[in-house]
Image (cartoon, rainbow, N blue to C red; front, side):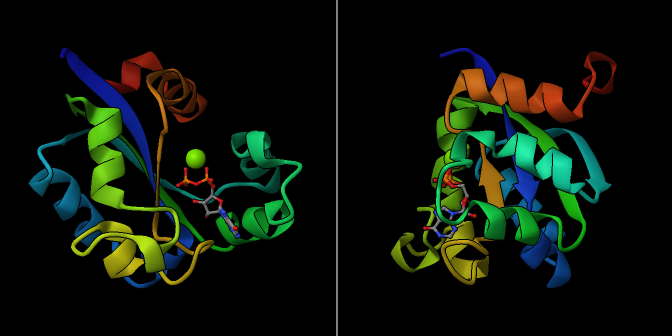
Length: 139
Ligand code: IDP
Ligand code: MG
């Protein structure tokens, strides 16, 4: 398997709890490298566009409100099977169902405020990376 890239967001709940470093530690301990990163606050338009795939879901408006409720840390991760590997590091969407030792189990609050985002496939990873980073940001 070739080296792959994926996209991460440390969400507002984890940033508020001073959890950026803790999530990055899990990423690095999981064998992934942070190759770009930025601290920012999403606009409502950006959050709606980023989560457009969920726009018909009942939780969409709440999710947009949550994702814009404070700053986030977006980053690009690199490593073997990075997409799948980072999803393993994160654990299940619902922290209550996530395995022990995962980011969402240890730092998430509920199915919405689940500490961090990770892309679900290489194609979405490429789209999500391009949403926040230019080619020249990536070493
Ligand atoms: P994922 O982040 O594990 O890929 P998705 O199903 O893509 O999960 O959902 C995107 C985000 O929407 C989740 O990370 C979570 O913040 C939120 N979310 C997902 N399902 C629910 C729900 O049932 N209620 C409230 N928020 C949800
Ligand atoms: Mg998803």
